[in-house]
Image 1 (spheres, one colour):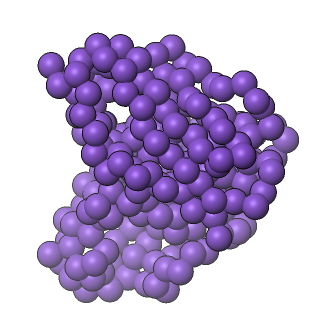
Image 2: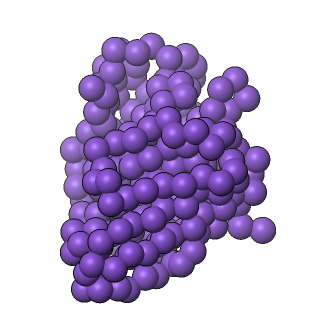
Length: 113
Length: 115
């Protein structure tokens, strides 16, 4: 069965600093998608970044980037220049082609002013 | 225009009642989902419909019945509500297949509280 593990239930980072959220997944597939979603207190689920497994280049979206290690089945999210608005729950997620998306249990990120 | 909209946003009801949550998407996606987020924030898929056909039905009590009148709508009806049904229910849509980008587009969630 596919699983997604986020080993850090909570993290804190000083404003303007860099933080990395960890995610590992378990799969025997070679073709899949990986995602990071953000859920602020408003509870809206917002896509932060998306990675296709066949692409070796790590995805980047402004201050957000990933470190995708396919062999290690690792997909960490790096947030640079952390801002107060980055405070949220962050969910790592995995999808095989047209199948359901499976979510990790989330990491709550606190930004310290 | 809201891409995925669900109503109501908040629902407070007594145990034993029946309630429905409606969802509509205007993205032209062919697949819609219901996810349940519990008090620990864990997101778990409940159902998925592709072009009105049920394709994913996780281990969900049969008190929960999804209905998809067309591919833009997916409603969730819950019979005989129990305390454990209290959660946030998210509707989502996605375009799967060659034209899809894989990600889910979520509604704002419906917080159900059963007293």
